[in-house]
Length: 374
Ligand SMILES: Cc1cc2nc3c(=O)[nH]c(=O)nc-3n(C[C@H](O)[C@H](O)[C@H](O)COP(=O)(O)OP(=O)(O)OC[C@H]3O[C@@H](n4cnc5c(N)ncnc54)[C@H](O)[C@@H]3O)c2cc1C
Image (cartoon, rainbow, N blue to C red):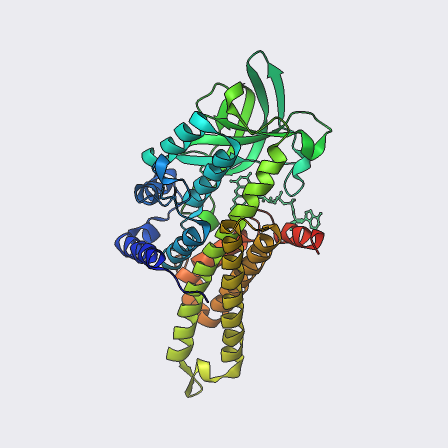
């Protein structure tokens, strides 16, 4: 595909060693807050939540392609365990883009150096794909704002030290009225809801967060007033190919397991792979996997090159999440009863794959973005 440079090879090797040393993470995935905290601590301790934070702020200072390579490798070795650190990386990019000077430096340094987690609070009961319908409100006060509303699902909600909240400053103004705020969950009026018991996302924690007249200082506004939609689109576009790289890592794992099984298992006197009913789908998945990888790293390369990347980011996310889900379903079918146990790797990846199509915009939302640029 493309040759990794020496630094990228070293980063991937370090990720491989980390994953080998921390295989226990996979058996720890029990869906409890304590376990999610332990997993987050392991990743943050190695700086995997701060790959994109500049070195001057104690982050890893990686470009997007290098970060994608690392997340792909970690997802290959420890599939489905990266939602917490990737979400923080996402929020750190919102802070980097939305703030300047001392405010940017202090928050990014705190996240990178102290291994903190962040969550972004966007989705509401009435505003999923249709984010212009956000009902969370912001009212201006002397020296700040008051924020009220309910967010339905926030990854890292119960372990975050920072919450990025999207609120509508001028109801009826749609996207142009959106604002983003960087808040502490310790502010009065913030309520962190009970974590969802989600077998699909058992290595991280997520749940609802509500805001009841939360006093937000003026300094908590990210970007200019009314620029929340721009900030959201910019960071979602940057996050999508990273999510795609995670999907590629998990899909490679499924592929390896299924191929090995197809070659090892014999039925009707032959190994499964000798039947075209098994080898042809694998040939197609090998091709789709390679295409997913190329799309993901093309989008990441374009971000680094400061070219346009919105179209390519959505294509990458759409293709990689589709491929992962289809391949994981084929894996379930091919491994048969072996994959029936709750803890079987294919079963776990299949559960995760069911949700990867919704994260950072559903498959249809990616198609809307792509179609709008055709
Ligand atoms: C595991 C997981 C973690 C998440 N983490 C977070 C988080 O940390 N923070 C956060 O804010 N949100 C988070 N989300 C929410 C996620 O961003 C939303 O689920 C997503 O944006 C879709 O919203 P919805 O689920 O309400 O679906 P809806 O918007 O109700 O869509 C339902 C279906 O209808 C389709 N649809 C909707 N409108 C159209 C249209 N115009 N044309 C064609 N099809 C359409 C959609 O594609 C989808 O298939 C998370 C979701 C998941 C699954």
